[in-house]
Image (cartoon, one colour):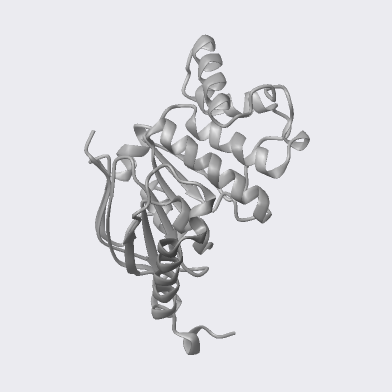
Amino acid sequence: MTDKIISAKNVELKFGRGSEEVVALKNISLEVGAGEFVSFIGPSGCGKTTFLRTVAALEKPTSGHILVNGVSPDEARTNRAYGYVFQSAGLYPWRNISKNVSLPLEIMNYSREEISKRVSESLNLVELNGFEKKFPWQLSGGMQQRASIARALSFDADLLLMDEPFGALDEIVRDHLNEQLLDLWQKTGKTICFVTHSIPEAVFLSTKIVVMSPRPGRIVDVIKSPFPSSRSLEIRDSKEFISISQRVREGLRSGYDYNENKG
């Protein structure tokens, strides 16, 4: 496996044609190394999710190229190189938590014994032991998202793509899940690409923060974090944290045309 999990060069993506054409991504060049935690932040419609979908071979670039684990996104998808966590947990209400987590393993034709082992390990990683037989409606929103993360972890992909998974949760639950996700990242060594609208969340979680402009989505800044991989929420009161947050905020402002986007 290459040490560059994602390598994008001059990626552009357009939807529609003629007067209906929309440029979603423009001149995106970025590398994500093995074991990095990279957050993508920018206003709604700036292409954060579109870029993740391009990595996942759910969208095709109009020009430029992108490699995932050194191969095309289509091949990486066939190789099951990534797990995807969406904005909503997307759990099936008629399947209990264990059965929801096991679904991709069933599709991949893992043996019953291997499925049981992997489901147990994945639920342990997200601290949902004892909830295997519960149904989604019996769990809080935060617990449902943890189950969704366990499902994405179940087949042990090296790359985890997370599309604003905590955006709908209240601040207290979100802080707790941020700490749990950071702990999970340290335990597994996964490479994580994480979409968020929250500056504190991006700065707290990341080894690298990618700041994007409004459509057409461009990268206006890439900020490397000086913080150790093991960190607590208390760092949010530090001068370094406040300084990086300000740089992110300035990057967002510099890429935003208030006249063009007002209303």
